[in-house]
Amino acid sequence: MRGLGVDAADGAGVRCGGVMAEPPTGTSSHRAQAHVRHANHRRYHDGAEVDGYVDDPYHRVRRAVAAGLMAEGVTRRGPVLELGCGPRGMLDPAALPGPVVLADMAETALRTARAAAGGRALPVRLDATRGLPFRAGSFAGLLAGELIEHVYDPLALLRECHRVLVPDGLLVLTTPNLAPVQDRLAFLAGRAPRQVDPLHPYLWLHIRPFTASLLRRTLRRAGFTPVALRSNEVGWRLPGGRWVASRRLARAAPGLGGSLICAARRHGAPPPPHNRA
Image 1 (cartoon, one colour):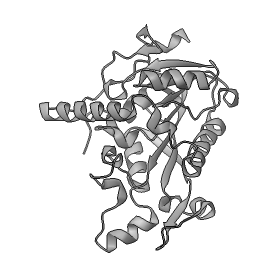
Image 2 (image 1 turned 90 degrees about the horizontal axis):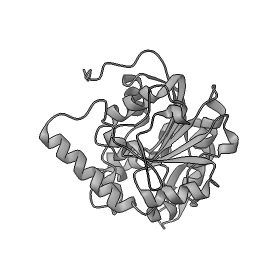
Image 3 (image 1 turned 90 degrees about the vertical axis):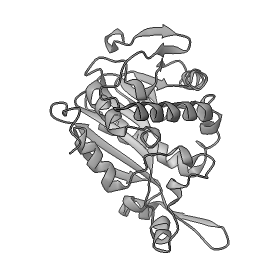
Image 4 (image 1 turned 45 degrees about the vertical axis):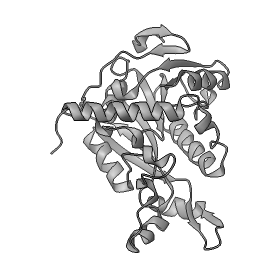
């Protein structure tokens, strides 16, 4: 996979030395992005946080739906990148027509993910907020699970995803839904949606939460055409604390579900980098 054009080998994989195509401007923006990067690395550096929840039914369904969209939607032979893979990637290399590249900022988590893949994936260590160290058109597909909500400038990240995908390449994103059904009703009662709670032990790191409509609009601005929206479950916590969930309702109304799982195609020329009008 030398054609990917990654920078230089280091430890568990390849260390990124690239620059984001559209860095935030201004000293305060750079400081904010650096703070976000440090906070996320401190929380997720060893993979233990992610490893503790991936077997939960909520996340197991989310991961399976995302992996299924990628396996069904890749139309070209070529590498598929999983960005922010954590200690256990979502993709099954045997289900894809080309090789898998696993990428993460945390070296320990990346090493664990490579072992879990049975050595059938190339590990690449990178920081997605600093750019993707690959040549344009390197990948037939790109999967980013629970990443975009952690990034200070998600539009810049999506434009980098656009750049490294082949024409008509497939992007699959998962992100927590800012407006699941229970939070919509809670907001009417004056209570803040769960995803914007600055006191939550880990949700405070979700600095860019999305609704279904905002996610589609941001993807279009970055040069993608959304082609599918899914969710894992529509859930409700009863007064006694019991959690009830429906996958059938999530299939019928994914915008009400707990997690948004969106597939989009890279179409057209790369968008202008500074157009935010």
